[in-house]
Length: 321
Image 1 (spheres, rainbow, N blue to C red):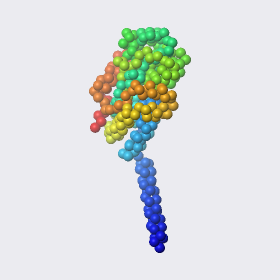
Image 2 (image 1 turned 90 degrees about the horizontal axis):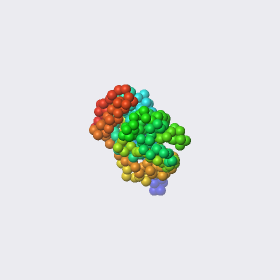
Image 3 (image 1 turned 45 degrees about the horizontal axis):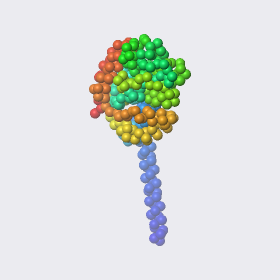
Image 4 (image 1 turned 30 degrees about the vertical axis):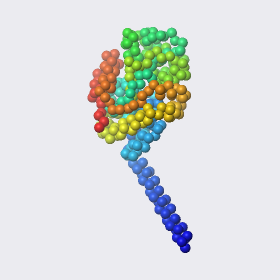
């Protein structure tokens, strides 16, 4: 009798447990279906890509009612086009795309900024190239991507060397195409950023003619539009909070980060190790110093006729409170 009673009790408890589990499952599914979508643009190997691979950002944002969707782009210029047309809500780019986008009429909003990436940004030349200095680029073909940090870096390097932008032949192409053109010797130099810089150094034995140090900080930026950012202050704050936490993890766990990015980028480990070793992943809110850097890019581009409208970058900063 006692044994029978225990069996009945156990059955009741199992049914109750199963019912509770099912209810919890339904609650999870239902809440998931009602999440507000937040779409973020990124590029291979950038901070958002790290967060995407790690997976914590998605979980944290879901707890607050948001479903994060990622979209990959080849460069920041492409992201700015997507941002302007509402195909993404946020974008992670370098320092130049937001300047050119703002000048073309996009109501850019700076949400957060990263540390300098100058050591991973570079002008590459072939291993056996006779080019010994930036001055030697005069009359040469140089690959770059318009409206990206590579354009600004080349412009500043030429200026420092006493050359004008007319002294070289600018070959505008996507970075993936530039890598091929460079490997085949169709261009004399290639202006790029990590992981492309590291890839060129490791797989092609390319030499660094100059890095961005002292020329271009090429920081990471998290961007949105003024319209979206002003309506989604909570999302801005949460996104910066959790992305910054992921970047702290990246700085504190370089070996795990290398493993994560090696898989994500489908690149050789030594390429990723080179990229990670020279990069600070810190992400924070936008400071006056950063605003001044962006203003300098805007002024240089305007003075060189690369943008037709003079802009004030201070007007494009969204305070995170």
